Image: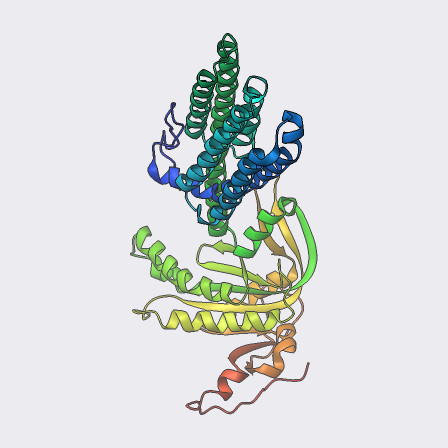
Length: 439
């Protein structure tokens, strides 16, 4: 995901994002938290009004009936507001509930202090207490804070004039106005910080998705996932584990490339790799290298697989079938595939500046040699691989050929089919036999 210049631009006066889609995403991201804050403010204010009902009459020195009436009405309003938060799935609805209950609470406090004759002493504290929940607990957006702050000041001045508090009006109105202005400034700074954190989170998420996508394109999915989960696995070195190595090379690649443009050759490679690699990945294989017209994959690393030899056999036969099913296969190079099972050092090989994930050892070398002994479209496996899957495969012994670079003669086999595939194929006229000596 690319972010154009100014994608996160917002209005200085309202702080709303200019991009309506981004504004909707921001409001949606804050939906659950906004509902929780509105409900918490409603329930918290309910407790305050319960306390006022208990300590108000003796503190004011008045009969309790009117105080209880006002407190009862406010408790009902606040509990209803808490219940309505389930309906507040949009920013506008949350603002309507929050602002509505704060204005009603301010009005109730002013009515109560006026009716009981204690406005001069308790009018300002009552408005301040109401504002605490409006600005700090509910945490209205900046525009909502301005509206509720203005409502507090207007209501206070109206009641102060009606009561006639005289010279105290200017000072008390100033206190209410200053408190509202400071709260609005705090709401502005808080919301701006929240919106900045939201856009930064968007950037981090997009960067993570981009890195994740690139890693999964340049590395085998299991390797990429393991590095993302634990970056320390990128250190040079590795562990010796038993793996099954699949080495595939395109027979006839050189002659095919003669007389063709590089783009045509690359298109051919992308076509054959495009059908072969998904087959390998589907069996849990880890593609570690592309070497021109060759591909190398390992099984049982980095994720352990108890049946890694069988997975490799399925992948080898599957990729040959996928290549054969491509249109225009005549004249196109075919893979020769070699499989070998044994110990290898699996890990990160290279230098501090750049490295690659691979499997090093004689097991890998023998797999590369075996593929040279295979005919195009065929799979050759070593005796060690055959020993692990002999009960489920059909093979043809190829004897013990001399392999380049190998001083020890090893018996090799052509992998013909998997046993369950042969058994389940009614059209097959082959016997389900398993030739080759017991290993």
